[in-house]
Image (tube, rainbow, N blue to C red; front, top):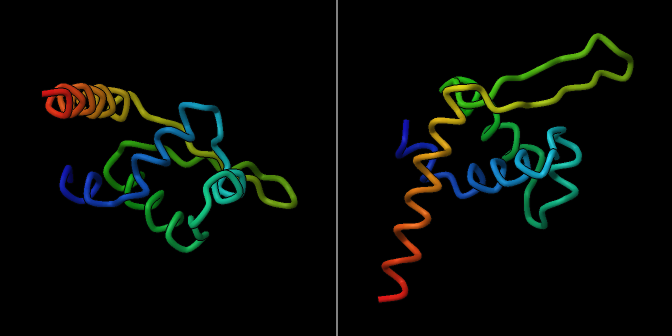
Length: 93
C-alpha cells in the first residue's frame, strides 16, 4: 500500500489539496496544472480502496462528489509528514 501511494506522484498532491479544503474532483483538476481527470480518478479510487480517503456522493442533479480523509488516512498522513521532515533534514546535511 505504501509503495503504491508514495509511488504515485499525484497522491501527495491530492492530500495537499484536501488539506486546503479542495475536496471536489473538478476543483482539484483545475487547481493543478498537468493533472488530468483520468489520472485523478485512478488516484482517488486507489486511496478509497486503501481506506485513506472516503468518497461522499450527494443525491443531487448534477451529481456532486467530495472526498474526505478518514481517521486511518489522518494517521497515514502523519507518517508522510514525518518522512517529509526527515527528507528536509537530509537535504540540509
